[in-house]
Length: 71
Image 1 (tube, rainbow, N blue to C red):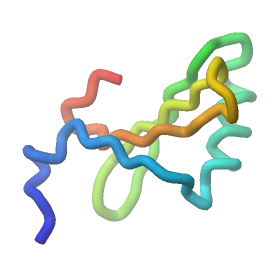
Image 2 (spheres, rainbow, N blue to C red):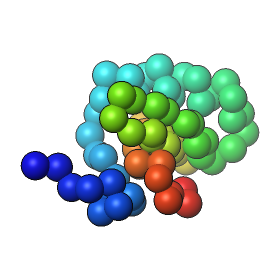
Image 3 (cartoon, helix red, strand yellow):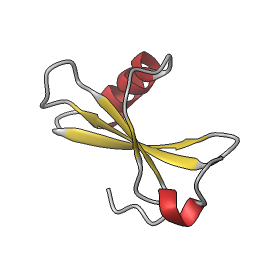
Image 4 (spheres, rainbow, N blue to C red):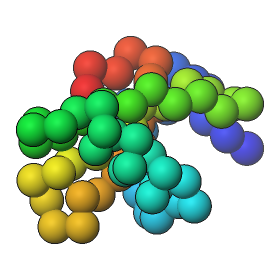
């Protein structure tokens, strides 16, 4: 059983997702010269924010549920 949205508000979803390369490429075009880029995402269940960190090895994509998130 999943937690209510109010309890999931700041959850981070780790791991490599199939869309990471696409998100990373889009962020590199939109946020040139910055250390990180925030990308709004939407799924059927929730709204998400992906943070791409250009200053970290591998340029990781971190996902957070967007509700009450100050990323």
